[in-house]
Image 1: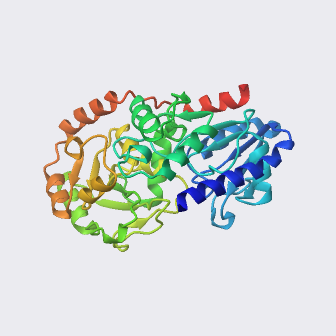
Image 2: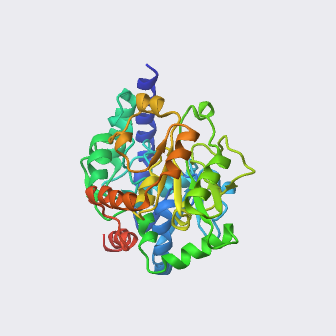
Amino acid sequence: MRNKLKQIVIFLISTTLKLFWIIPVKKNRVLFLSFNGKQFSDSPMYIYKEMLQYGNKYELIWAFSNPDSIVNKKKVYYVRKESFKYFYYFCTSRFIIVNDTSNIYMPVRKSQVYINTWHGGGWFKKVGLSCDNYSDYTEFEFKMKNKQTTYFTASSEYFVETVLHRSFAYDGKILRTGMPRNQIFYQENKNEIREFVRRKFIEEPDTLVVLYAPTHRSYKDEIPPLDVKLLSKSLNKRFGKNVKVLFRAHHLIGSFDIDSSLIENVTDYPDIQELLLACDIVLSDYSSCMWEAAIQYKPIIVYAPDAKKYIDSQGFFLDMDKWPFIVGQSNNEVSDKILSFDMARYAREIRKLVADTTPYENANSVQSIVDIIINK
């Protein structure tokens, strides 16, 4: 009953907002949202920065839920999400660039181009309609979102099949351009960016930098914390280097149970792609940031003490025992597998795994989206 009521409310809001349709769409206006207005980040940010080269030819607008919390919004024209101005710009922008499935109550006209760049390369974890326990409202939500969407970008053919088709039930137009935010891993100046970012966090260039980026779980407080001291000791013994652990919280979490004296919290760092480029190892659980590590062929450590619970509630497209990563369901298991890690074997397996997905990531993914904007 509650879900039905939510659907009725969304329908009424969407219908009411169509009053803005009496105002013509402005052909050179582009609206950007990242994580439902929470950030100035991700693929929308990369596209926005590329669009700046066209000067005043395009009107570029961001929508932020809490503008005061956006630390890197200098010189960005923005409106507050859910304000009158936001509704006006949303309904009159020729192009709308997003990276999630929010805003389902916002009506999109046929003359508008709505591009969803999504915020994860997909891969193993199930989401949306591929989960066994999805609700009628979830199905309604994706129907509404798919109705809005003109294009979805895709990181790989595996993403198209598992996420877009099976998880989102999306059968619309797909841009097999790669994720715009992942262009950074293929740019000619990637090594310069990598070294610049590393110098912000380490003094010794040969330090082994680990990025710990766990995903969102509603029960995060029940998860045994990562033993950072044991992790660092094991990595030091296996690789013979000093270890620096950077911690990045999921955008839906903001905090995590971890010993802050042994890590550096980089949650507020404006661009996680730069951190993924700068680190040597990615440590996560089920986060899709493993995709970004894999396409760089970097070692991946999975700390998953809640694996059984996560599998029962959400599940994976590929069973965990088939992942080529260092996978442990306890701190001791992670430590043991680090000490026995075979880098040469891993290099072969990760390259095959990535190749099997038919990846579309490349050095021109941002420009591919910009070309659609300037030529449409």
